[in-house]
Image (cartoon, rainbow, N blue to C red; front, side, top):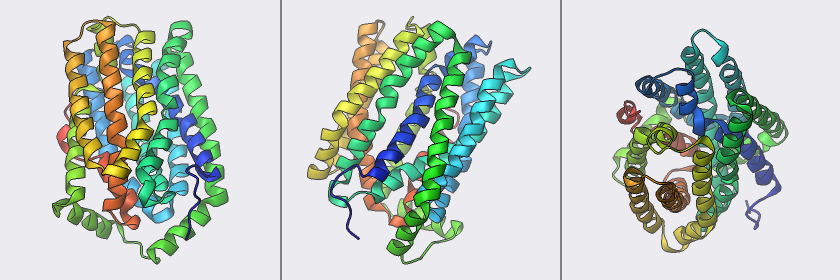
Amino acid sequence: MERPSRILTPLMSLFLFAMILANLGGTLFFPFFSIYLSKLGLAVDTIGVFFTISALFPLVFQILGGWVSDRIGRLASIAIGSVSGALSWIGIILAPSMANPMAWFLVSNAVGSISSALVSPSFDAFIAEQSDENNRGKVFGVVQSIFLVVGILGPPLGGFIIERYGYAALAWVSALLYWSATLIRIAMARKVGHRERARVHEATGGARQGLMASLKSIALLILAGGVFTWIFLIDGAFDIASKLSGDLLPLFLKSAGSQSEPSIGILQGLGALVMAVCMVPLGAIADKRGERLPIIGGCILWAFSILLLWLGHSFAVYVASFVISGLAGAALQPAMQSLTSKAVPQELRGLAYGFLGTSLGAFSFFAP
């Protein structure tokens, strides 16, 4: 079956618009979530425990979500996950007014994890299935560059809303954006989801493994010592590193770096802007020169950015750290996503991306 020559088809454009709406809500709110928990009276060690417990939910749901995506189709999986995500925002809005806000946030996080488990693997698998293998790195780069508008606009706008109107208003704005995206996703699944399932059925010859058989197939790919083994290990190392620092990074910048919420938002937006600008050319390099070069370069750059963050005590040094981190992400993401799509069969792509979403999760569980 021939694919359209243009990178963004009308279907992919609408798909991407809904993803931007949904994730804009998240990037408005969650870069400041650890600060919000602190303002509600939680100690830093308690916040760390919260994020550690929260890490359980993706570990449980993500692999199952990838398998469901392979079974029912990408758009249907995203629509179902979006309903779960819409419910989680209700818990976030209500939590501060409850007697035990942490319990409410944990329940909301658990429900929201069902959403990310169904949406995240489906997103990467959908893009892979809408592109040709010879330009897949570039397609991932273009899509991720456009998608990164959420990272460019979200944190600075979130910091502005907090400063002017407070965290409660921010939660409502974020929720309304996500609820709008949910309506679009449900409409897409109802209109074209059956065509997507028919195309996948045709491509796979109707062969769809059960959960245990699919898990066994993925386990064999991981243990085989080939490309997917290395993808799994690299992704797992980044999972551990990001869990050690990522969830508490905004709190670190505020308490140790003396940065305000708007400044933290600007830093996060700057990193996303650099990533968006650099992702397309670096994705093209992955297509022309192979994925190994940008992956190695991204790993080195990311380590250097963390070193700067540790040593820095000024806004200028933090700017340099986030710029280099954005460049590292631009090198890594398209190459890793493209290589993964080539290393696994189409009928296992959702499950493979789900595995990578939780790779070495048991080891990173206590990191926060």
